[in-house]
Length: 185
Image (tube, rainbow, N blue to C red; front, top):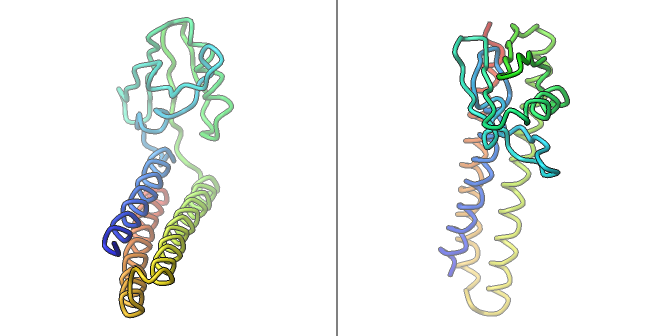
């Protein structure tokens, strides 16, 4: 019972880290990468649809993204989605494809991106701590209902804290790596 609760908590914590990784992949670092715009929501028939479902995205050159829509009628909607996003990119539409030129990042923009990264890291840490809190609450209920002993509860609390520390350490490492990537000139 305790092992199941801790395994479930670990699973939730890992998924929070995965969400963080996906978020950080979308923060640009001066290099063209399709991941930058894959999940960009585009208004398609009244529904926000990820760009990767509407177009083929490639990086033919180090600083250029090429977006080739499956349906040419979506060009305007894709262009609009890029303009209103927080990417800070201007799309070039030639009627068939959209080219995104990735400019070099200024020092000021790099620092802004680092702040965004720190915010996402803190959100993930909070999510991990919330999982710990909820799991500990469940374990205390088990102890209150006499399903586990007080010693089992104490051991589980220690194990949960170690798990939480390990996951937060992983979040911190991810943040340090992303920060280095952003600040790299």
